[in-house]
Length: 459
Image 1 (cartoon, helix red, strand yellow):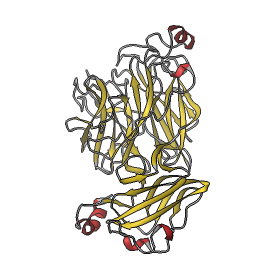
Image 2: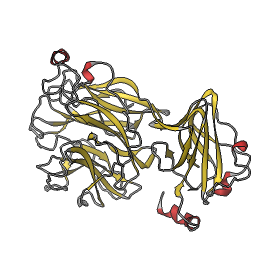
Image 3: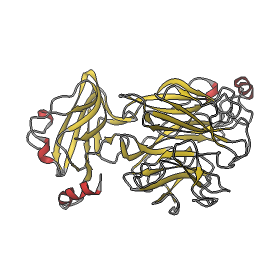
Image 4: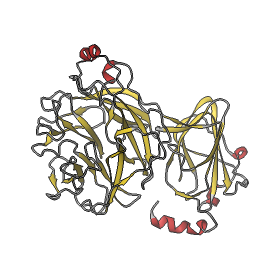
């Protein structure tokens, strides 16, 4: 919410413990930030649907060890950046290049005749990670960071996303043992925090983790702060891929690579059959969902895998299944993310996975039904919009209560028209008027049966 909007709601916040000011923001069911309690209901992870191979690492300068993909939705174009390198070796070696492909639909990607956009700049093609700068005072439209522990992270700018130059000769984040910088470090402009944010590789107690820093100008950065993962298991998070979700930029999401060192599946004979490099089959990886609303805390509400390796021995090798940075819309009702498959193998490629819009997770209840009560909220607007899906026999109703859970005439469950169907955006209807409660603390009681609710917002 913009500061101007927040100031108009301050009188409602003076009545005790402040409620959560949601204004007209869309909210996702990806964490427990807005939840007071649930009975008979749960938050359930979405199920990504495997789609087509969108890119093969088939050029001489690409090959089995191409990695660290970034997909940018740029108006009517999708820009894809990645490391190309045909052989195993030391991080930051001279054979690493930054490669490029583009698409008009996020499905069919094409490489220019010369698809190298950065080379001869070792070690900065090791993990070159660009973004579109949404800062209205940011200058160049495209920025990037890259580098390893010995070099520090250098800042790059571009006017067209293809020709890149360093912002300055010196690194903007100095060489350091902690953080390590040896993974896909990333940065973006945060609309909600009104600053640049960077998430980088950190080693804590010999476990791969995440640190964060901020900057007002992309050149001078705050000290790195290790992230609080909320008491989650000490998973090795190889890449974090945290970015503002395109429909809710105040919520950052990351489909992170979870690395499992020494967790070997293939025998030596099976490894030879797949063609994987002999040094890259004694570990496994999958992906998990991270969310954060800024600051130093990341939610690991879901501890289980978001995307499993799946059928085929090719997917059970070291450094495979690493997701690309960014979730992007690929149609009015679908969004996509991309995963690096067959790492260290001649068949290395990038695979697309699809979800319904806002379908990272949902409020779910089965046939017996369930309920969720939110914490006190302050909203702006006149109507409540849901993104939901039910069975033919299921349904969703919503009750609006005062902050102390006192009923509001005309906005009870019995006053709500049952929501049935599968819609990305449908307004909830009651006998009473919701608009009268704008700017006042209220709670929402969701009653769900054989259905999922993916997001809501006041409009």
